[in-house]
Length: 204
Image (cartoon, rainbow, N blue to C red; front, top):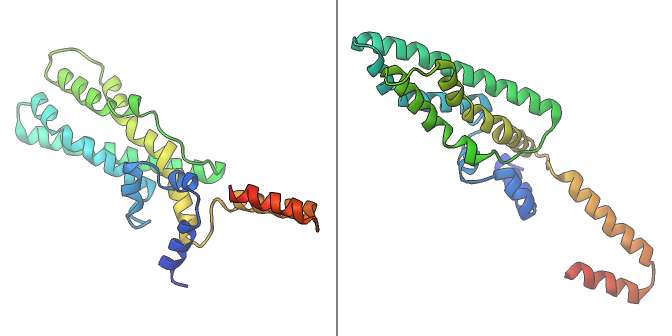
């Protein structure tokens, strides 16, 4: 059986709840369409760092009078920021591999505004409009991406890898339900009326 056929067969057998847990919301569904090597948690973390770096070009222009100096410092910061996000993505994957934790929904109402808030704080600091500690701005900028990767994407990527290997990550739950059905049939034995009740209950 081809890997794509095996993937489709396993996904088609999942319940709606397991399907939602596997693919998540719109952002995770977009990442799940990518090849597994490209959607690696470290790559997703680095991609977040790249997007934040692009948004910081203007604040760095405000901070330095010389354009070359602004660009060189921005390149250095971007490399360090993307590297930090990449390393945190690897750490999250290692922790998830050890804990076998299932995906969790990140607190969107807290995490989603944080990049905009961090860029705003950094812009105010670099323009000398307000004296804001850089550590606070950088923490606010850094937290959302690695938090999403750790809570949601790294566990989800582990499940997708299991499916790619032909393993149903929710197989234990289905086995438990199957054993319950078999035990009910065993208890009914040859009692046809009781078997009809069991069948009617399963049909509902």
